[in-house]
Length: 223
Image (cartoon, rainbow, N blue to C red; front, side, top):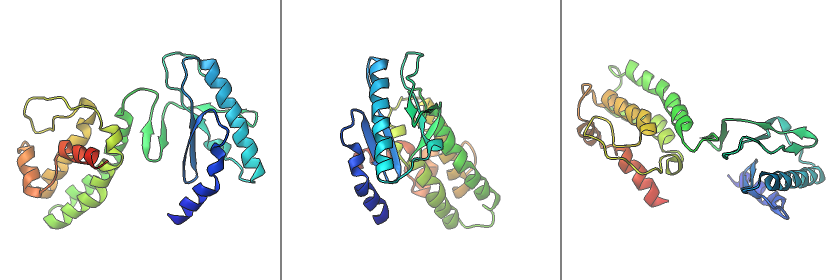
């Protein structure tokens, strides 16, 4: 942690004299610009990219051009042409930045999909060994390997307002969050040994788990 902090302090002046916004986290740097005129954004970003290149050459910190990508979020179909050291920066339709999966579309379906996929293998192992492991051990596995993945940056991807739906086994969350809700419900059934179609609220209460609604709401308040 100290090494990352010292590195950020060392490179902090890279943001000086930039027209675009720069965000630094350890060795990950993002640059972005918002404008109604795509040509303005293109000119400003290219100028700032040139300044960044000069800065890295001066301090002998070479850029890994293969990891430099761009994403365009907007309604127009024409993308600005961005250059770095004479090379065109590749545009991507999906990008993982600090653990958050981003797309040009204003939704978090991809992130929810990746979170669910990452947790499914752990849930599969829990099901395989549920007759061997104790409830306490299964509970610890959920809280150590599934809950942190769900909770990570949930204040960003789960910030949409909830929609009230009929009382079912699934939480009253937006449609794109239901795969995570279903994952939590399946994990609760595995840990508790309850039968499928059991009341979600009752199973969570028995285990002492927070529902997704309360979990997300608590994290928003703490933020």
